[in-house]
Length: 124
Length: 124
DNA sequence: TTATTAATGCAATTAAGTTGCAATAATACG
DNA sequence: CGTATTATTGCAACTTAATTGCATTAATAA
Ligand SMILES: [Mn+2]
Ligand SMILES: [Mn+2]
Ligand SMILES: [Zn+2]
Ligand SMILES: [Zn+2]
Image 1 (tube, rainbow over the protein chains, first blue to last red):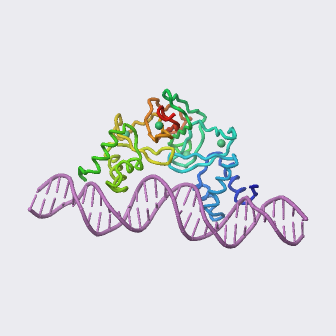
Image 2 (cartoon, rainbow over the protein chains, first blue to last red):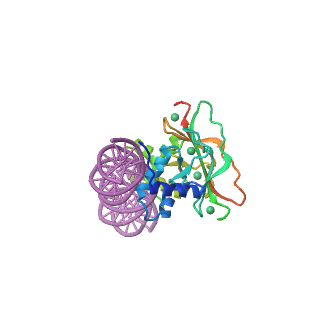
């Protein structure tokens, strides 16, 4: 299944690169208003994930946010840091701070996801 | 708006107390199969939240889980600890470990939510 | 016992995301 | 370049978790 280079794909990739933060389908749709279908955005984003170009994270608002993979390994996406979601500008950013914890004895870890909501520097 | 004591309310409260963990509507529905409507469960649970008897937390599976308030203050629900969701038995439990972090300068905190998925002692 | 109105059941709606399918358009190949 | 192949798209329909509208039922206060 060879991927093709389409306008939709390019446009969404540019948005992700420009954003420098994780974007939701909703936000992307607002940016490309009328240019492409809602479903196309979802499909392009999910293909990015399949290809290991992005990963998606479910935020504490119940929506998925898509972020470019930078220091991610093939099947081990590195987002074991806190994610901050600004209630003002709705930006989602990866914080420096790593999430650390120790599980009770006998427990096995599969995944962790930590969200902080509040107001970013510009919105506070 | 004076609350009334109904069978549905009693039954759901008993389940929450017996569970000793946070329950989803889905799980409760399975337990009370056929006794009450799906919507009634949601409404009873949400009323508990309004009354400060429970709080609800959105898990990393996109579902709400309802937990009895123990050491919660009126409008400041204390769940600043890690929540563990077992992929085997689907139980959600509050871990001892507190979530700690420092926000970048100028940021304002509103809320945080940390989830760990994996397998509990019995399921591992 | 009766009146008041909170709580319920059922159908319909919302919100975020996915899926089916026919039409469109990248790209590989002669 | 022209054509064939099939990935991608658009649109409608569907899914899942949760909420809302509304007529009916039933707690409880009088
Ligand atoms: Mn990644
Ligand atoms: Mn609470
Ligand atoms: Zn902001
Ligand atoms: Zn378990």
